[in-house]
Image (cartoon, rainbow, N blue to C red; front, side):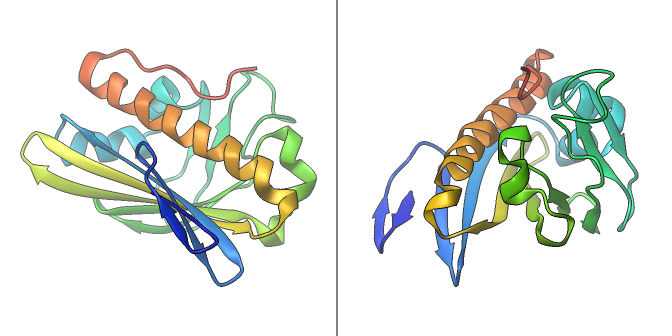
Length: 177
């Protein structure tokens, strides 16, 4: 569903909502895997590098790093260097700060104004987990439209890659140049 100027529109697995002065992207997927394996895929840097970004730094604690490096060996561009875990509830919630890709650096990568990614995990049964990604903090003005559209597309691809990695062993890394 897409909420735009008070109109709710249906979209494929992507929800966009408006709160006070910010916009939020919500994307969800159901994965045929138990919640502990899905949690591990998001919280183990070895697993994150199999389906999200080829190099990662994940320090599994509140305040710990959640850094993704989309170009192997490059620590200066196309990364989330400096991003931190802000909330951690085992097998239920993972929240972290987020930096957008280089083309949105001036818009959304200021350390004191980073957007937030909230990942929620819901065990449907022993072999099925619903993952909901809620990306908050996008500003409600024209300058942000391209960044919002890019992130809608990117989160859809990220969750597709996660599902493929866990169900088939075939993750596709996100955001490759």
